[in-house]
Each structure stands twice: as structure tokens, then as C-alpha cells.
Image (cartoon, rainbow, N blue to C red):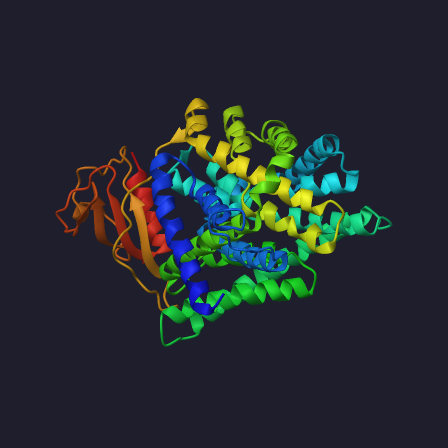
Length: 484
């Protein structure tokens, strides 16, 4: 296949996937499911007849894509909303993954008659929730959730992959070399988590200094710099045997919660890059799967999927959140949004490339479980949220059209503040609010219309104010408008 034909196929599949996601949104189907189906139809067993079975390329592309997806998730993580769920998320990402591995592994040992090590390996492969799946489906479904459900889900999906990676690599080593002591897994896990956390935070702080102090000639070059930061973080952390994915996520969190030049454009760039990588990764995984092989494992795989969705995930969530002050309905919703995506299929390539006996079964079953998870859980999220009465309205005000590029020398930035419907300042003129001189209201969004504010403009409940100010003064304005 020549270069022109390759680009024609790639471009056609990407365009078809984008159109399919638009149609899927109207039908209530997650875009990720359609991407997988398109990949399968284009594969050797489908209409396209494209031959592809390179697991090394799949693993490389999957890990690179996952790194950038986690980085984007970190950029969008607001520390003020994540801090209250920090320990709950860490518990789900560690204890929850281990419990899921044990329960699914026990079921796989019985259903597929696998050796215990290989069965537990399958449990570790499908244990983590998928960041790309969680972020994508929640956005597609425009699903608002009460309380701390959404921050917890997003934080958990962003940090539980490193736990699964360590378990998969460790269990793969035990499967190949049975003399490997199981205690070594615990030490390896602790070392990787500590190194990943320390390196991620250090490189995140360094990246903030570089981005703010280096004066690049073009705004687009700052996006290139963040791509370099992600690559350097992955490479450096891997070289010292730390958790590269955890380090990348922490770098994203540090950047996302710091004052950066061109912050908005960086977020827009990585949002588009993440979507491209998601589409490409799911298309690639669809090409890699041979649908003719799936019926052989369909019945036991469906039973294992039921164990994962209705037993392993709920038990892991309830035990991991034991003692956490959270309504039972909220915990149940967290248990149901245990979406699996491309991560399990990427993890399944590790035992395949290592030559673990029965690894092809692990790959086929992992793909089957991903398909079931996206189809069943992904499509039912709005219904389950309404049934549990945990759905909430989303803040759907338009994105402000004005942008501000901080120079790095000052601390001013555009900050959006919504006027609460109970504010005592509703109906009062802006000139009578007594706002700090250091805070300037630049634009007002009211009922999807943009208003240029004047001193005589009267505020209404639900107005979204775009304010140019340093964070302390913006917080003063917010507190003042929130008074009743």
C-alpha cells in the first residue's frame, strides 16, 4: 500500500468516524462504540479487508495516546473540586483496582479454566476505568451529576491506570517466571508510584517556569512545548522505572492549576489532539480485532462481563469508599460509571508480546468486555442517573469570545463568575456594587446573548460575568455577589 493510499484510508476513516459520532449522539450511542465498529468493519474480517495485526505498534500508539489523554485530563482538573475527593479517588485507584482484579480473576479462573496467574492477569487488564471513555461519554451525554460524583469519577479514571499497568507487568513477569516472588509486586508498585509523583510534580513546576519565561515568536509554538514536556516526562520517568502515566497526569494538573501564558489556547489544542488520538486509537483497536474469533469466547465473556459490571465494580467501590460520607445513591452511580475503553485492550498487548500462554484469549476477552461496557454502561448513564436521582443541570452558558494572554509578569487573567439567583445584588447597577478597582467587568453573557457592561447596567440572576482581575480580587467579587 503506497503513501497516497494509506493517507486516503486514514483520512476517510477519520472523517467517517467524525460523521458517525454526530449521528451516534442523536441516537444516544457513544462515539467510542461507533469508532470500534468502524475499525472492525474496515478490518480483514470486515468490508474494508485491511490486514493489520501488529501488536507492537498498537501498544506504542496506545501508550502515547493514553499519555496525552491523561495530560489533557490533568489540564482540565480543577484542584479546588478535586481536593475534597483526593483520598476517595486514591482508594478507588489502588484498593479498587486490586479488588476488581481479584474478583474478576477468580471468575475468569472458573469460566475459562485459566491458571490462577493468567486469570488474575485478565482481572488486572480489565480492572481500570478508562479516562478517555469517562471523559468522552460524560461530555457526549452532557450529563450533570450531583455532589462529588463527577470529580471523583474523573480523578479516579485519571490515576488508576498506573496501578493496573504495574499489576499487568508484574503478573506477566510471574506468568513467565513463576519463581518471581509475589512480594516483589508490592515493592515495585510503591517505587513506581513515588517516583512518578515526585518527578511529575517537579517537571510540572519546571514546565510552568519555562512556559511563562520563554518568549516564543509564535503562540502555536507553546503547544509544541507542551507536547515536548509530555514526551520528556514519559521518557525520563520510564528510564528511572517510575510510573510515567502518573507523572504525565500530575504534570497536567500542575499546569492546569497554575497561571500560564496562552492557557486557553493550550487547552484547546490538547482537547483537539486528545479527540484525534481517541478516534485513531479506537479505530486501530477495531482493526486489530478479528470478529470471527469473538463467538468462541462470547458466552463465558458475557458472564465475565456481568461479574465485572454487577459484582466486581460495585464491591470494589463500596469497600473502597467504606466510611466515606457519601450518599449510597452517589456511590452506586460511581459504581455504574465504571467504563472500560481502550486501556484494557492496550494492556492486553503486554502478555501477548511477552509470550504468555493463552494471551490471545486474554486479548479477545478484554475487547469483548470493552464492547459490552461501552454499549451497556455508556448508553444507560442518563437513565441510571435519573433513576438514582443524582442527575443535575449542567452549566451550559456559552464560552466567552474574548481571550486574554497574560504576559507572565502580572497576575491578571479573565475569570468567569456567575451571579447566583439568590444574590442580594440582583437588580442593582454595576456602579453601585462597590467592587474593587482592581477588578474590571469586561463582558456579560445573559440568556445566550453578550452584553457590553456599563455603570448603569443592572445585574440579573444567572448572568455570567467575564472579569479581568487577579485571583484574590476576583474571589472578592465572587464572595460579594454570592451574599444574600
